[in-house]
Image (cartoon, rainbow, N blue to C red; front, side, top):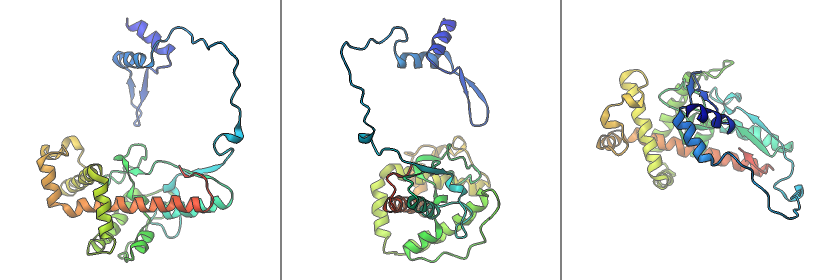
Length: 285
C-alpha cells in the first residue's frame, strides 16, 4: 500500500519531503501524501474538451496594464546618510519616486512583516513574528518625528557597516521609539486619532501588542529571549486572566507596540501614495 501511495504521489508531483530554513530534511508522511492526493482529486483519466469551435482570447491591449517594468530591492539594504543603519520607508519613497520618473511602474520588496522585537538578530523576513503587522524597523525616525511635530532624543551614531547590524539598529530605534511614544502619550493632538485607530483594529492588534509586550518583559526579566512554550502557563493563552492582568499592569508597553504599528501603517500608506503620485501604476508590491 505504501509503495502504491508513493507511486501515485510522485505521479501527482508531490515531493517526498522538504528542507526547513535550518537545512533539516523532513519526510512527507504517508498521511500527508494521502491527504494531498485526496485534495487534488482523481489522478487517472483525461478531460475531453466539449465539441465546437473556439476563438482564443488573445487581446493584449485589453488585458491589464500592458507591458510594464519595475525594480526589486531589499529594503533593509538601502543606505542613506539620514537613516539609522537600515533602509526605511523614507528611503523606499525616495527610491520609488526616482524610479517612477524613469518610467517604472512598481517597486518589489521582500516582506515587511513584523519581526520578533525581543530577538533583533532574528532577521529573516520570511519567518516573522506576525504576517498581519508591519516591521517597526522600517519606520523612518526623522519622518515620524517630523510628522508628529516631536523631537527625537539624542541618539548614538547609527552603525554603518557593510552588513546590517540588526541588534545595534534595533537598540537605537527602540530608544527612539520609547522617547517618541512617551512624548506622544502626553496629550498629543493626534492621540485621539491613534486611539480610535487602535480600537478599530480590534482584537488582532490587541493580541499582537500583548504578545510583544510579554515577550519583551520576559527577555528583560531573564536576560534572554524566552520561547512561547516556555512562558509562564498563565501567559500562554491570549484569553487567559493572567494576560489581561499583564496588559493592565504593562499598559504603556502594550500601547507602545500598537503605536509602532500605527506609525508604520501611516508611513507605508504615505510611501505608496507618493509612488502613485509620481506616476507608478502599481507602486509597492
